[in-house]
Length: 165
Image (tube, rainbow, N blue to C red):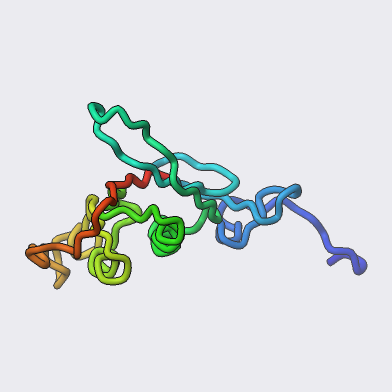
């Protein structure tokens, strides 16, 4: 403060607030900065759900749902909302293919029970310090086949893809 007036100055790279609270545009105060797979942007994140048809079916891929979130929101945070909305439209698939950003152990366990949806996708690798440095006690890989008969089947439901955000 100089004579009751606040001094304005540029902040250094190490002096910036976290992305979730930093305003990135004077025109859109809800816009945020995010980085994913080496790409950085200011704005929002869009999540698309679409049908997945085999090429020989002759059916087109159709977008069934779109969710826009804050750019800093994790992909896994929108899955329950997507399932609820698809169910409300009568478009909830029996199998939902997702990329690794959406998959969590909790989702793999709860989706078949809460939504009768089998979630399919790669599970994120274990990146704990103990695993990387191979020291100490960490989580060790284990395998589970889960329920042998899978989630209850629903007739007339197709497989859906959740495209990358």
